[in-house]
Image (cartoon, rainbow, N blue to C red; front, side):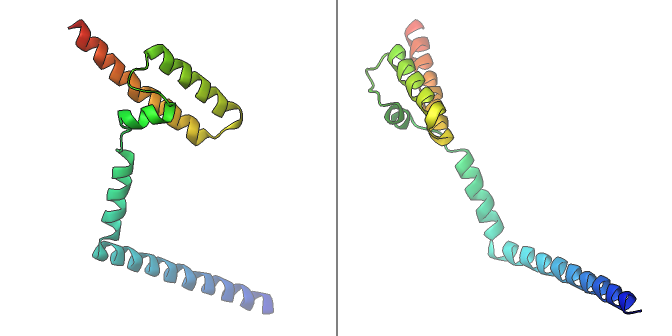
Length: 116
C-alpha cells in the first residue's frame, strides 16, 4: 500500500515539475523576444560566421610580406600546418589554413589581372 502511494506521489510530482518547466521555458522565450535578446544573439552569430580574413591578417599569420612569392607562402604554410598538426592546436592549424586560402584567392586574382 505504501509503495503504491509513493509511486503515485512520484508520478504526480514529476508531472507538476514537467508542466512548471514548460511554462518557465515559454515565459523565458517570451521575455527574450520582448527584450530583443534572441535577435541580438542571432545577429552576433551571423556576423561571426560571415567574418572574412583580410589579406593583412593572413600575411601576419603566415609571417610573410607583400613581396613574398607564392612558393614562399606555400613553404610557410606547410611548415606551420605540420608543426600544429604534430604538437600544436587545431585552432591555430585552422587559422593557418584559412590564411593560405585567403592569399590563394589574392594571388589567383593577381595572375588573372596580369594575364588579361
